[in-house]
Length: 245
Image (cartoon, rainbow, N blue to C red; front, side, top):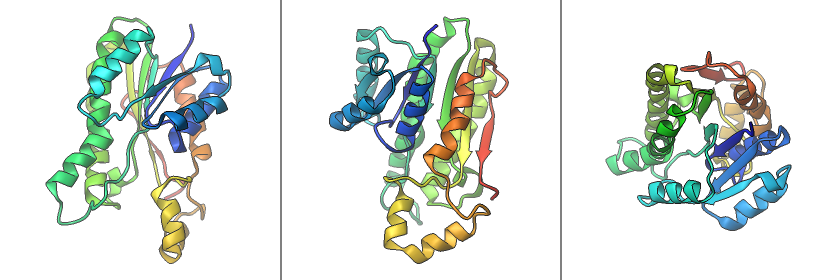
């Protein structure tokens, strides 16, 4: 059976590196992003290009559920695996907490993912084989060592996974997350901090025992292994990839 993986926010950065790694392993990848040109460029870099699809959509808009249904119905696609790579920090995420900023952050980091999962879960329940929903959380969800709304939203992701794992275990739907420390890539906040505030950047790097932040290439093998293993026993797991922190 062809393995089909839907990866949110996968036109660049961490999401794209996951897509690239899984395309090498023969997966049919559904790329997602808001910019059609970037998506086309990303698809052109994948292995076995004819296997892959592009879903151009802003997942945080009210129109997203309909666009999601239209796309997957039109193309007669059903992923076996969903990887939620969409996420990040919203501008002005600071204390005192602004409720509007909190709501925007929750939409970005968890609410859109819940809507996507809600669409696919009934379809997954109709099948007998194992299907997987993998979220990208953050060490900030455990420590609070980040902007307040971002930390809260990622902590909500963790609890959501724990709760769903219990509820859907007998449906063979595996929920889990990787919980990385800082990820360094071209479009990341930390790339900007490296350029704009090198002293603070160096201070944070020095706090990491490996003396470097993780790159997407460091972490994608862990996600690929979760996709490859035909087992439910990672369900409910928050897999910490902390680099010794």
